[in-house]
Length: 258
Image (tube, rainbow, N blue to C red):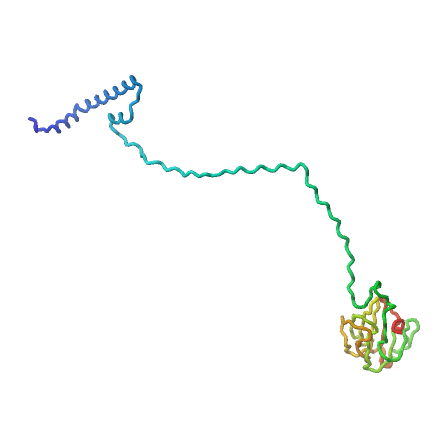
């Protein structure tokens, strides 16, 4: 339906609001707000949000109502540290030092000679002649003897047992071979330790004895044979030259061999 001006009712309402109608609506809102304030004053009740929203248009959107994420709760058991132990009233007794053991004497190794004075005596040791034959020269340190090979007079520190070349030479007692060497004057020499500080040198042997250094020998065992290797006694009959020392000093072999 149109009026005489040719405008529809909706068009006329829009023109009204665009003109003086806006002020009329604003005045109505002010009246409503004033009425609400007067009601609060008289009743003491605050209008709800819904009442206000009913009269006041929403100009700004409300903040997001999305629930905030919360951190998960952890049940952590807090353990109380145990109390420190109280110091003992009495100190613990210190250990009693033990007496150090007394050192024991180290036994001397047995060299197979029976030279332990508590076990045997040199007088109990049995000796034999080193070779079968006659005595050519005696032991003599004081009375000089003439050397036909060297052409002079000199001391003789052993006994010469005359015997043909190749005659077997034996150990005069149990012992251990200590040395074996070739001497420029005495020829091939074997030195045997017979214990009790007694050493015997068997000289003028053939070039190759049947024993070696370190060998254990027994009374009467063969150690070599009579030779012709001694240059100092080359003019004498073939023989074995036997000399002995006791604790490093020359002794007469006849005192032991007999």
